[in-house]
Length: 142
Length: 379
Image 1 (spheres, one colour):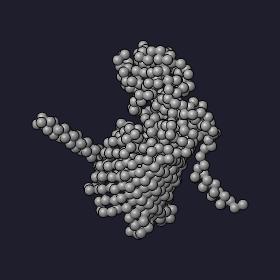
Image 2 (cartoon, each protein chain N blue to C red):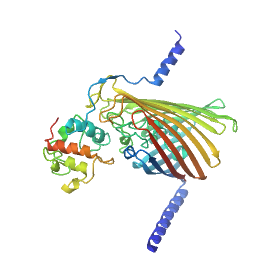
Image 3 (cartoon, chains in turn green, yellow):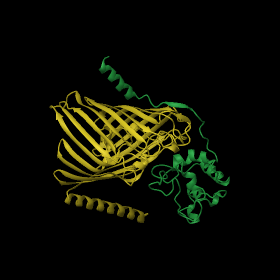
Image 4 (tube, each protein chain N blue to C red):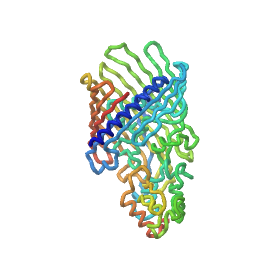
């Protein structure tokens, strides 16, 4: 056993990096649609539950956690801290402050005009439509 | 019309007066003031990709103010304006009692990789940063795609750096530095915007530790073989608020000057833990981490006294399960190759114009051609 070549090969293997082991595919990509699971995976997690914004318990810089384990209970049927409106009013998208924040119309109901996600491109029409339909359908935890 | 001309002249006069007053004040108070301005236009040929990237005109400006408090102690603050608005790039005191032992504390520029020494626009010939160190000017670099490279530079953080240099014989010089800083922040992957945002404190009370060392061989002035330098860097910490997820990264670099040609290359890699309890993974997770690594090789040489050329080949690879919410095209082994050629024109001492063309060849996304033109200056 020659230690130097062995150590060299080990270092080379480490340098090249074999990467993590990956299991089998367990589901298809979650398509965007009017279910809470789909909205969480496709919208809330990547666009809202970021470290500088709505992630953490409590988030360091924002009043609302939109992490996967907290988002539903913090959104549905809870009153906004900025207006008397509910954040998500099941069955009534127009009276849901969460949707108004995404659309940038919250100022019209006495809230804060700033559109969410702040400092980032607006959500796409498909994403907004999914959220609107999910609320109109009763905002189930589906 | 006359009114507009008058107002324009008045504004320029007022600006000149403020600048002159600042310069006079700085001179009287023995304060060093320096700065730079750079405006870049980035054009992307693929209109379906363009809207997802920060294409178009990007202005950047930096202002540094320094003051020597006494022979061994100085203070410096640097503010920048760019895509993120205004931010403090550093705010530090530097205690330099010996060549071999110095201490920097505050909001400091953390040394990682050779490029961290050349990150200012006037310090590198290409318009863009290498992919492994890119900060926000990267095709497919947004959060749902690659989420930037290995470590966006400059890496600025709050903490303490102990550094020094010593000669090993008459030609070999060793530079070394070790630091403890707040560390990068994130939740199920790093969040580089959060890491650079106020408050400049640690999110989890687990500081990052790391260091860098470089060894430089100094040749005789005018010789064909110029200075040769090699370096290594490393850093590790926990990045999430719950103190459960680690990142660890390291890199190696080398540069060499042959007559008037400079050749350099760097490798960097980062392993980042992911949260397997998040919903939405498409694959079963065996190893709860992903790896991002890459390298570049670069060659630059003068063409005329006021013109030089640069050529670079870049690779960035991400291996691991795509995160929930990632773009549908991102696979478990995704790579971007990039070819860059550029020219730098220096018509005046403190003025430079950069032109470059980049060919992007990703494995998972459409091929791109992009072009940059930028004008910058320093004072």
